Image (cartoon, rainbow, N blue to C red; front, side):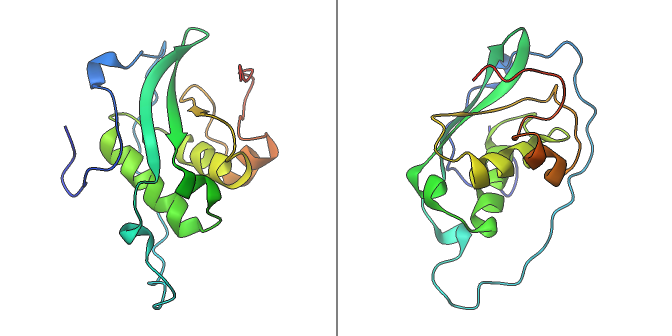
Length: 147
């Protein structure tokens, strides 16, 4: 089921399929930067095709993780607007994806680890801000990256 204002574009599993972490992260609004339109220099991120091939909750080492399979378009992009549009689509398609720190993990993978087969975003990881997430190799906290 899609949220209001969300269009199709990401395959996702149902909420019931989501493994639950030991403790659900608290919900908080995500701050988003509003950028001016691209000014006619090619299509905007919203006009682009599929950015994420799949996003679904899986279990990893006893914790819930959001497994994201990016499209070739997202893997090849270096445009922050494309990253933001892809994240918006994931949040629209996958209940619970917008947990603290998850966006930073997503953008970090898009920018620095785009060629990994799949990106595992883990709500159990601490929300430390984007640049600390980058310095931690997209995986902040004491949780060891299983892949």
